[in-house]
Image (cartoon, rainbow, N blue to C red; front, top):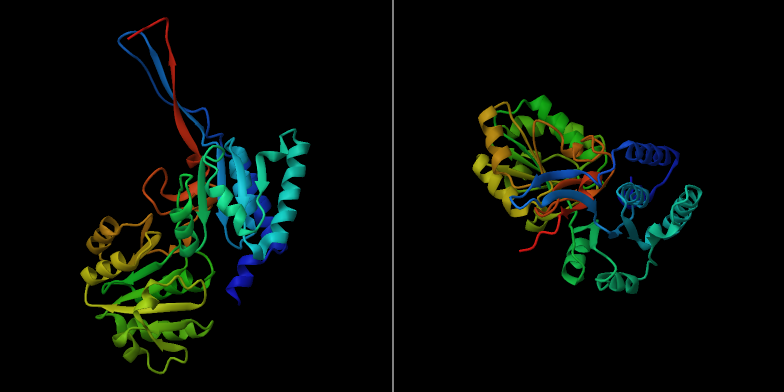
Length: 356
């Protein structure tokens, strides 16, 4: 149950999942060379806007060995080159993975250096940060501290794939059975991933009944709860209970831990999410369509749900194929950063001697 080991684990089941993901990427259409716009100007100039590769993509990521294969496959399919920097913990796995990738590239008459792995030492990261002549964009994937470090130190443009401090809000008109199922799924199915729930926010009007049903469901795993004052009073007797501090509500737990916050109404829920959200994934559970619609419109996040688990925030689940990460910024791409977003645009102009 160690989340760190889970993130590093590469067993037969996960290898099969990696192979399946690569095959799916291979079947996706080439995102480059698409004509986005075409027109002829008053002077006869023919304009065409096309998609082109980003160029050389630097990817910095933590732990998960499947990411090495995902990013390599996505970059190759989108005609980009990749410079990869994994974590020290996964160094040996990444080296074997890159060796395998290069062998397959050679077999298919593709230059093996389109995918390269940087040494795990920090100096190599600093070299990547200053390689403005050679690297077009850096994409960090991992913890909030990693992303912040890359953002603050890189001279190369950065596209952030954010850490997830994920909330599920149980509104007063929620169906309790449905709410318990969603919250349990969002927390326990794979707590070490970025789309797992970190804080459950509960309307005070429904909290006693909801928490009464949630406790035995969470205790099976068991999930540690970090509750605010009001929630703590309702949860007394739960064997894995702690009093929450302010820091607990901004934590990405990546483990079987969860913060619990009680609110008077949807206004307080929205305020709490605005304060602590990393703009990754947020969900409301309610049978009140008006409140659901308000939540969907007002919450500022890459993916916003009503009556569904946040665990669906994933390129594969969205039908997009493998992803580099979940982008939480608003420029270039937002949400699952999949194949179709690994491109830029270029204008092609054809003339017959026009001058200005």
